Amino acid sequence: MDKRSVFVGLVICVLILVISLNFVLYSYYDDSSFQHIATERFIEQISPDYLAVFDNESFNKMVQNISASDFAASVSKTFLSSYKAYLSINDVTDLKRIATGADSTQALALNKEIYSLGDIIKVRIMLFDGYGKPLTNGGDILRIWLKSTSKNASANGYVIDHGNGSYTGHVRALWTGSCVIKTSIAATKEHIAIVHKYIEKHGLLHDMVAGFNKNNIQERTPCSVKPNVFGLADMCNFTEENYGLHWFCGKPKNSNLTCQDWKFTKGHRTDHLSQPQRTIARLHKHMLLKKSPAITIKGDGDYVLPPDLPCNKRPNKETWYEESPVGFYYKNKWHNRGCDITFVPSKVSYEKCLRDQYLFLIGDSNIRSWFDHIKQTVTMVTAKHEGQTASRWFSLRRAERKDLNLTLLWAVHELPFYTGEDSPREHIKSVAWHIDRIPERKKVTVVIHNMMHIARTTPSEFRLHVRDVKFAIGRLFKRIPEARVFVKGPHSATFIDLLKPLDFIRKIHEQLFYEEFGEFQDKITYLNYWDMTACIENVNVHPSPATVSDMINYFMSYLCGV
Image 1: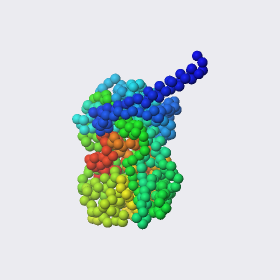
Image 2: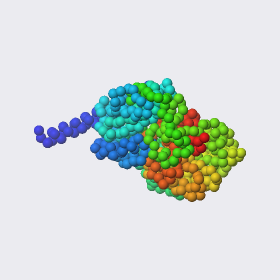
Image 3: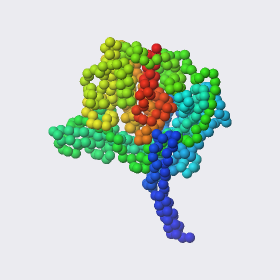
Image 4: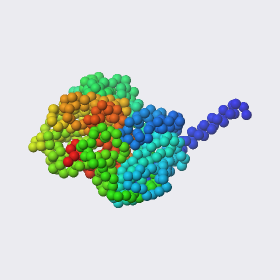
């Protein structure tokens, strides 16, 4: 056969392959046991422009370099080292090549179904793709949790990635009775790669704009933490206006407007992911493995008791070094494992705990719900304050109880902050700006929650925000050495339109807080809310009022105790 014939034959084979790929169909079916994750049937033709190519050996080595203790850690210490490897994954062509819960398997590591109270129960997990073929690489993020419906009990666990498509899940027998072990593929490696490559390119996952206005001439331009966003050559550098943290917006095209005419910002839900990419980010996550092993736990007592150490006496540093789960639900009541919750919630106990306090909650709407709960519980009066506007949900909030000498405040963090409406520049200030203006009071407590909004940007950018807060905390401790500072950690959410791979991002954020706040860990309490919300299968970005109440009571147990 001559060389020309061989060449023609190869060309024909390539054409046949491309045409075949263009007609690959993938259907996503509802899992009735996990209805809040997938609520629709989905069939879509896949474009051949997205090729899944990455170095399996290098990627597997990266995963295997993460220590088992870090998978178990309540606060991740080394997971950031995996970030570049995820960015090396190219977009996938055939969605059936992605891990799927329908075909993946799990089984108890030991051939027994009865365990003793306090035992660690191991589960062997093998991931398979949509063709029923075993995966040979790691990187998918899994969840595992223990559940007993009859006792309203649940506890989060952890999963070790062996880097070859196999995983080992760990749950602890924390109460007696019949239980099931549930496992889900929370975030596929392809999902993580798609979202973070997009963020690295554009700076943000969802769009933000700046509004310019002068003499009734108005214009809006895109903004990001990175300059030249979406190919714009002329940018306004608003970093100084954003309290030293990166912020760039396109210059107005109208010659009558300048950068000095910036009046407001606004965040959108829109993004520029392709349809196949968005499909992966919406549907190829939180996929429950269909077979849930059933076990029985026996032992003396109903559940594992906490140590004889009130949470308010526990060394702060220990909260940065716990192993999951840090606690569990039993009969709908949250129990800590590392300390004894001696705080009993009531209006009287809240008043006793918060007397003489200057309590400042800084972050987003998931810490504003704390403000609302505490204000209602203690029956506080809204106080007039500069920058406080009732019509703006994101404007500063202040409430007082003069008979208790109690001041309660809530404020949002700096840009990127997504308001959903036009937000005047003066309403958005930095966490550090607020901390630096805390008055010198005998009892000052600050709770910081940087999560859902800043989770839409890059890890390097998030580090800069955390570092800025750290410097402000250092200044606070110099002014008020007795000040208390808490970091409210991320909470779980499985809302289908939440495109962020939250299970991955929370590990990155935990590590960045751990590294940046290292010098202050003996003075700062880390509040783990991931275990609390993952084990109850929390769906929405805003947890239920009952869960918010549990979160605050958990915080109050560290602040005051009895």
